[in-house]
Length: 106
Image (cartoon, rainbow, N blue to C red; front, side, top):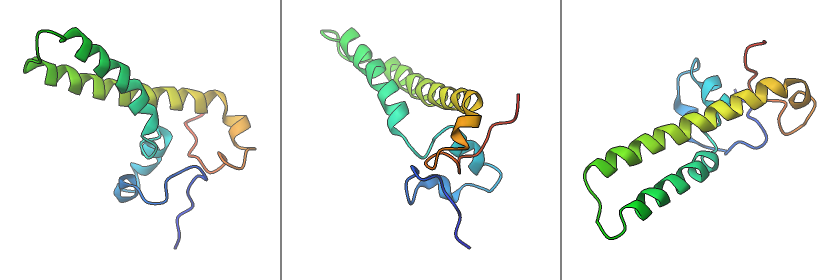
C-alpha cells in the first residue's frame, strides 16, 4: 500500500522510517523539510563565529552550537504547528496542504 504524503514533502526521507505513531508529529513539525530550521540556525552559528573572531573556538562552543541546533529545530516545529492550528480551514482547501496531518482542535 502506498502512503499518501503532502504534495510538498520530499519523496524519501528519514522520517519515513519512524514508527507510525510518531510520523504525524514529524510531519506536523516539518522535520522532512529541513530548510526552515537551517535558515534559523545559520544566524546563530554566524553570531557564534563572529563572537570568537580573534579568540578562536573553545570546547564550550560545541555545546552552544548544539543548543542552537535544538532551539532552531524546536522553534521551526512550534511555528509550523501554530500556523497549522490557525490555518486549518484554509489548508484543508488547498491542494498542496490538504494531506498534512492536522493538529488537535482548539
